[in-house]
Image (cartoon, rainbow, N blue to C red; front, side):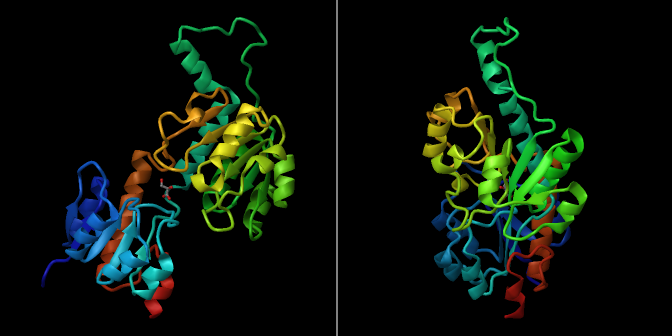
Length: 328
Ligand code: DGY
């Protein structure tokens, strides 16, 4: 029987490749920089039966029209906002993702941002580099505690709940959240309270964003919303850069409308190196490292390989994004 072939657009952890080998599947890995553009990715996909996409841009209706032969597309991510899922379904292409395995690492990234901003840690690190080791006055460069404060979570799903758990259990924080639907489990386990968006803005000491990027959530944090937050509040986004309006966040930070902001996601990515946020005392930016630990990336590669193996056998994917495709 002819061996099936997968195209992989970036270098994924060895574990994923080993699972493909063991399943008798061949693969081509694109190892070069720069990353492939959409048309190049389409050309490669045309010569393969399946595709592992690590953040490939342009997976739109035309992509799926041109690549309707693909038996499966396995995303090396949990998010799928850059993929036209209904177009994939219409062309009969199953899409898989990597849910759950990155909850902990992403929640830890949010926590790291919260603490770094709260204690001005990056700003003080930069001061040492400039020869200014100067906490000479007991009132100088003080941070704020996070223990016992109110954490407002926008999107209390799997990652948000992981963060809420850490913050409630280790830091005694009060959890409020804003969601489309009630999260009864989190309410029972953590005493989390569902509030309106306006209440969340007004009551939170720290706001952490964990919602998907949709038409509804796009730009939901702008100057008007920052103005409604406490002046001591910290804004953290580890979800998608499109949820906040960057220019308006910069204005709010410059005017000390809020205490500070920690971002693991920006719009666009990569962020321009001369972006003012990178020089601001009250802002911390990471280059989208939410899932980037050895352990988590291994698990993501495992999920992607398992999705490919199932898809190439014509079976239902273990981690499907468009399960409705199997009924077609
Ligand atoms: C995801 O998996 O969607 C993350 O944002 C990638 O790090």
